[in-house]
Length: 192
Image (cartoon, rainbow, N blue to C red; front, top):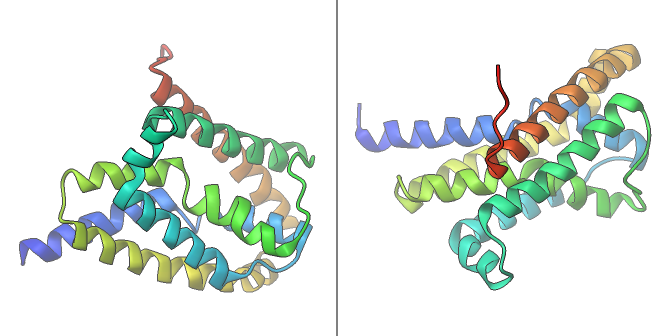
C-alpha cells in the first residue's frame, strides 16, 4: 500500500480517537436539552477553523500570551472536568444563554476542538506532512458534522432513560479524561 495512504489513515484515526465525537453524543444531547438544537454547520466550521488556526500558528500564538501547551491543556482539562460534574451530578455550572453561543462554547470549543486535539495536532505536525494532517482533519470534521446533525435521531433511538444512563456514564468518562489530561500535563503520577 502507498506510504502516503498509510500515513493519511494513521493521522485520520488518531484525530478520530482524540476528537471522539461519537463518545460526545450524550454530552451534546445534554447541552441540546438545555439550550435547543446545536447548529451543526456553525459548530463544525468553528471547530475546523480553530483547529486549522492552531495547527498553523498555535504554539507561537500561545507563546505571545506566555502560555505553553501544557498550561493550555490543563485549562482545557478544567472545562472538561466541570462538564463531567454537570453530567454526573445533574447540576448546571455553565450558563447556556443562547443557542448560538452553545454551538460554539462548549461544543466547538472545548468539546470538539479541545486541548487534547490541539496538542495532538502539534504532535502530528512534527511527524507528518501538513497536507496529510489537513485532509485527515477535513474528513474528520465532515464526520463530526453528520453526527451533530443526527443527535435527534440518537435521542429518539436511545430514549430518555437511555440518555440519563449514558449521561451519567459518559460524565464519569469525561471526568476521568479531564483528570488524565491534568495529570499528564502537570507531571503528577499516581501509584498503581
